[in-house]
Image (cartoon, rainbow, N blue to C red; front, side):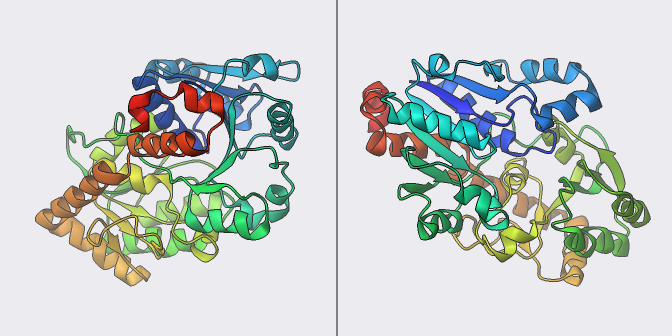
Length: 374
């Protein structure tokens, strides 16, 4: 099949975690013999920030890290109909401009033979409901939502009636345990500040317990305000700035543990949806401690990571992982085992192809290799 993906950016993961999963999905599709193309706007803010911070060399580094991926950019004069002429499946990510979302729907309504999917991996359905509710999705064949609660919101609001849960997952071609290659520090957290959606939680579950236990460690991410940087410095954790996703497995290997601190909209309104970093960290075999979060869909087993409710419990868990190597190793083993058994990009591609085999257009079903329909 030929699969075309519209994304804010595949090249840049600067404050853009969606790129992680989408890269992994396209890589797996390519490995199975499918033809993929990612289309991204030429003026995406993530790519602009990436180049401003790291220069054009970052674009070349993407090509080196992901040589099997093909990306093209589009501007105002781009011919979308021509680009999609041979497509069997078109997946449109929810950061795509609303006018283009509608335009692609009109192509489908006019008789385009591809299956048209809308892919939602954000909390805007609750935090910016009018934006998502205002999208023209009537001509889309199906919606891919990255959690049951998000799927249910689409159905309850009447935004679509063919909505399927399609969780994110780890790209095991990239995320795997690596040797430390030298002394390890205690703690790493990889995450962006965002819009202050978890400021209180970062202090309660990261800086304060790390300072209380005297942990060494590193924080990587972008958009941290001066107040947050000051609290990091006071805690003893080093702020390392942005990090390319391809470099994260090596960064995990240089530390003994990591933490999951979800953004508030997921905790309060969209339970059951973890961030991509949970999948990636467990895939790398690093022990993980999670701040309060409801695994409403049972994605993980008891013992895949440590669950805490308070800052005090977080501090005690950090000490346990630092001081008990056997316990930390067993936690890491179980977490990796769960990812390998159910939460890789390969699993998600299996799920996608199964959905397309049932609900895809006639062109899509005909293009699916019979071995993938078994």
